[in-house]
Image (tube, rainbow, N blue to C red; front, side, top):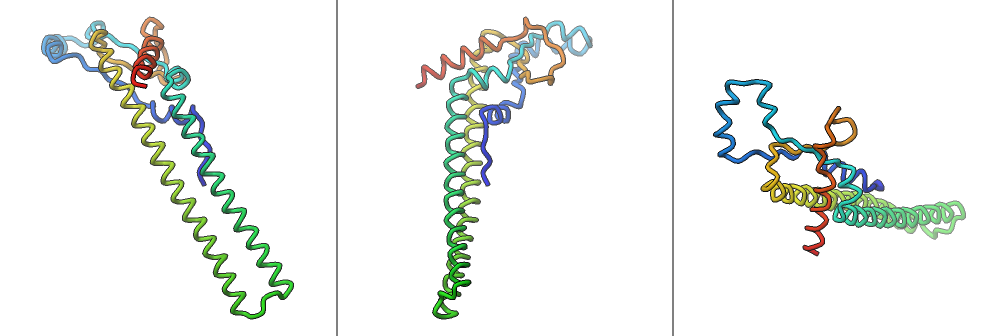
Length: 199
């Protein structure tokens, strides 16, 4: 069966990774000697920022809209399966009543209806499998689109900001982070402006 999904679940899956934005080649070359000769002190030269996943899930219009679309599709698929399942159940009950009341004129007639029930059951199982595969494909397409959207935005965004590393923060995956490193609001605003312009 296709389980009902939530916006939170969808986007959490899609955003459960870090965005590593590397410095330019010149910056790497210039800093290579220092990296060889120093240890802890090298971190002082790094520019690191983080983005709150929850804010992207709740405030990035593309994420919100597409999660709703997928949720509606999930409900639609569930309704299709439930409808077919109810029809099969009704047919099975009808068949049982006919058997009990001796309404079949021949064994051949009973076997024919029984075969029809088996076919319905097979069709229902096939429908469940097909819709599950279809929904998984649609969900994966959404996850890929969301990931690409954020990556592409950050690639442009970081041309000016020059961060060495941009991390995602969700729950306690980062035990401590200075709020000064939080660029969530700026990123969400940029994502929404970019999405609005594309629409």
